[in-house]
Amino acid sequence: MAELYNICLDIGGTKILGAVFNSKKEIVYRLKKKTKAGGDTSTNVEEVIISVVKELIDLAGIKIDQIHSIAAGAPGVINQETGVVLFSPNLPWKNYNIRKPIEDVFKAPFYIGNDVNVGVLGEYRYGAAKGYSNVVGLFVGTGMGGGLILDGKLYTGNQFKAAEYGHMILDPEGPLCNCGQRGCLEAFSSKQGMSSYIRQQISRGRETMMADSVSEGVFKSKYLKTALAEGDEVAMEAVDRACHYLAVASGNLVNTFSPDVVVYGGGVIEAVGDIFLEKILAEVDRYCMPSIRETVDFKKAALGDDSILYGALSMIKK
Image (cartoon, rainbow, N blue to C red; front, top):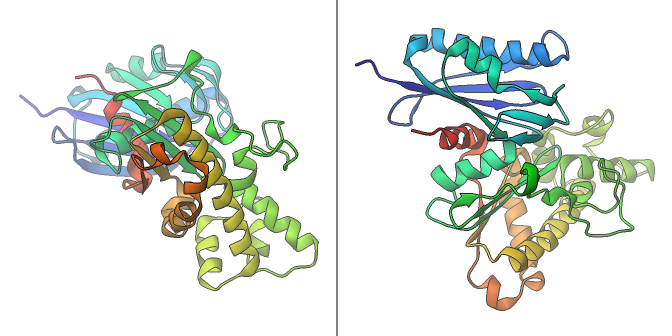
């Protein structure tokens, strides 16, 4: 009997990462493709997904009938049971059933969930949180995402909207967040939040090597890494501020859920996670109840860009 394979996808607003997993749960082929190559319609994104899956099948040298399942993580509020994307901030999907067209083409089950939920699931099954039962995941990227594992199960809440830690309000008089509220964790600690702070300092006449990278939006993590290595004062302040609020938020989450472990992931953590973790750990104790804090570990995600791919693999039913 021919070996069966699973295809897993990380669907982003600008790109799709794809991987083929063999029966030993090893990646045997991977691929990256731009999402918006042909426009911003639901059909276009769907077509790109289908083309990526077809390309993975072709380049991995396998046949379509060897595909056991396809699974994906994508941004937004997603009904994991039906495959309907209720809303996605970075993709043109609203109340859109993405499962049906994929299953129609490949005649294989298709699973999809919120990307950060799926990433935390990946770390729980295969990464930094393996062996723990209760996991809080905070992913720091352009925005701020969260995921929660309780008693070994992904908790998605009412209508799959749980764990929006990025919109925990930490200062009601704080900076405006994209969600319309003020003082959200995302407004302080995401790349958007740090970029806004850096632009604010530039407007006050301060110099920073981050100026060009934030002039038209959000910096790339590699530029932050370079600036910190060079001792850039404004970049260091932005990171100190981000880590302070991450420590406060982490303390609130520890006191609320009493997890076994808090895992930090995302593009920023992938680039400068050691610096972030050191600063968070220097502060977090003061925001935790001591009796709870002593039973909690704090870790950097282990799977990097592959966390969502492995989380997607974890959603597949045998």
